[in-house]
Length: 370
Image (cartoon, rainbow, N blue to C red; front, top):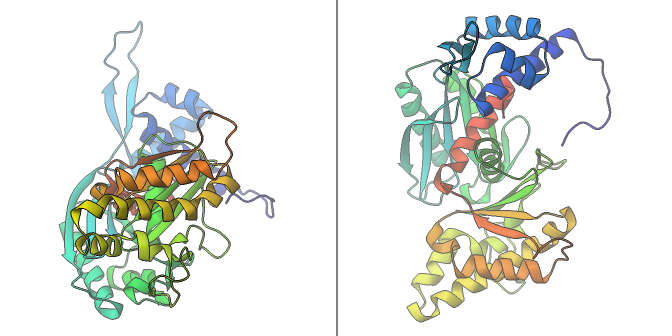
């Protein structure tokens, strides 16, 4: 989370970088505006805004869009907008059980091109080869400068982009960022897939300042945004709820324990149970999965005082009995002082969230925009 204690002095170059990011972020979220508008919105002086606009325009990050179209007295103001084609970001989503997905993303969050690579049960070095091959294809298709590569992967990822543990892909101590930097020679930023999905909602969707995003795919993970800050934990494992044990007598998990939440709720396991059961019992299967999910996340909702939980994953599995059951359990086990208690919804465009969030990894690190 945010630094609580100041430990070093602020240098002039830090202030300038902060102000550059402030202008870019204002244009990203609020759209084109004049220099005077930028000064009012950012709180920076007109001289500072003019100086930074000239600098950013010379780098191709912003563009002059011509006079304001509405009629006003006096000389019409010249509008300035983010140049969404200044850079592309190549992003990878490694969260699904049957495929890796990639995209070329413009810096305004627009997906320019997407591609997929069947996983074919690959793991270890074979899975790494499939991921790099997919990125190679996308890099070749990009038509403008590449700002970097962003990757959303299951598991625990350290600050340098090393995947400490991703049991479903059989990765442990894999320097994923290093491998990609060596091959592609551009900045590479790697993070947990659920964190990526949470950042996508925070950056590109209307979202509350605090919420929990639960991603249900090959595994189950949570991304936590508290007060507009992504919470990753001191060991970068905040939100690793997939291996919370909810049934001590349950099935053996890839992590070596029995009855992990992932064994009950993750897409491969849930679809397998639905295939092996009669249509008449499908609702009960999904309700049981929702109950397990609710039991796992209710203490988190209570401890953090969350009002909003967003589920991401296949809508045919999540919508209906699973969501209803999870919400009922959470509300029955938490105390609310306002309204009916926590809200639970399904994310729009779930299939794009990790791709867009991986782009935010890069935008945040390279341009200070999120």
